[in-house]
Length: 471
Image (cartoon, rainbow, N blue to C red):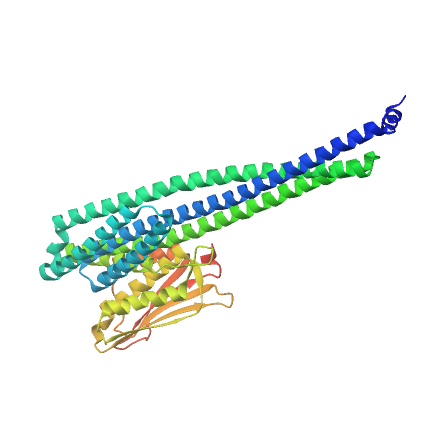
């Protein structure tokens, strides 16, 4: 007797069929109970995973805020030292902005830690240290103005400031390290929860499949092989779709993380440019101080020329601003802010006017800095040498681009006395200008604006090929 015949014979037995139906019903009820239990566990795991993710985000926000506050403390320290060295009001204004930014970042970190219920004692200590640093700096400002440069070398003030900065840095790094541990732990717990949630989902799916198969078995005793194969195929398709959705979500999350890291890298690069400019400004100030102590006029001239070049590079570097996702700078805005700095450096000198006419142009940041140094050097030379003819001095800076917004020409003109045609040896600044023009793959020319007269003027012209700055 075949298996089908044996099964049909058994099914004809009423008592056996009733017993089997009761067992099947009991199995269905048990499966339904297990399905509800797995669904409840999956719901709990989903809530726990969301909670762990929120903890991870909060820990990451506190860590980032603590590192930003540490960076702000270092910026405030740099600005304070720069003022004590230079005594410049612009440096004092930069310190005030750094101190204001420091207060905002402290308030942000305090709000985050208060929400998390952690690091209250450390934040109080940091707040007290910041208030004490502010008071000490105000006293140092008064001493600087009263005692001059000697206040910049006050060993006691610097020792106290460094001790305060080290203490705050240690506390902030402790906060960042603690939050990094919390972040790693929360992410690990979240990943574990997601894994168990996946297991629960698969289990729920399998239990649902078994319940469906059992119900169909009760309704239809004759299930052919084709429909069984279709159900198995549907099960695999559903599992595959779930895996694809999960993988897609992970890829989107990874893309978001990469974008955040890219934005952070660009912000750090912009901050690095500003720091380099500040450091070069300090070097320029130190060269100026040492130049006043040199007795040799020739050595003093060389130091002053070097100081002017360093100052020009510092001013250009501090004004670099990246544009978009590439290492590009809006040269027209860059030159505008650079010339504003030069106007500010002139103070109340009403005899010198500087005008800018610029098209909208973008270029790589390193080329923009070189252009800024050349323009600064040309303006400084015009102010230094072109005023011997007497009267007011006008300087015009022109930036011309083609229709494709690619830089073609930079021109600096003045209406002063003009350069000396008989001078055969180029100065230090001129040598630097020529070297920078060669690095820019540009042609540098110098000529008189007018052919003759007491105010022949000087024209410095920088010409580029169409794709020079795109290389």
